[in-house]
Length: 243
Image 1 (cartoon, helix red, strand yellow):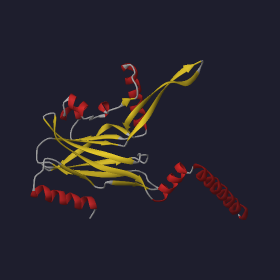
Image 2: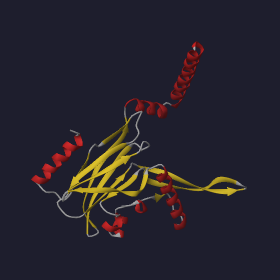
Image 3: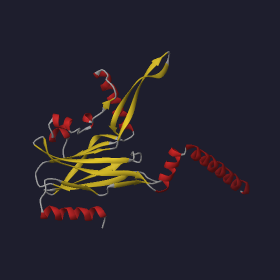
């Protein structure tokens, strides 16, 4: 039996023993990135003893993201201006039981940063509102293209009256670090209960060793890569000479 199924049954037993407003957990709290990593699927499952809708917001570790605006000068495109967004989420995705406009008031969507149009992006320094909107849209578009921001809302499914689940996919290029998975219970357009579950994305095994050497010992990594390339070329040549 899969670990998440066992955990789900334990959660169901706990709900029957003592009702809680909102309780949720992940099938795994760690995503390990290995050499052949092609992405990961996680299941979030939970329960609630009150009627309402569920919204799930997944945020990756905050990072500074630079957005550059190009302009054409003498027929050549160059970077003319830029904006740096401080502590922007490196990954952002939402799941919900219904379209977001049907489960929460607009001001609550903004307050809790539910939905890509409400994600909190704070630039360093002041700039005109029009420029801010342009750079913000460019950042979101760039992150969407590499599947790190999701505009579409993934489904959350109720399994009966109290139990729910959602499937979440993390792509192969998912950033490493500490993630937050926020689960909200909404009723009448208001958030009535919330829970945050941690998630760690980390490199493990051989890929982690390569990553550490490449970033901390660049000269050693470059030398090793060169030696490996020469050796591989020599071995291939030797095989073809024999053929």
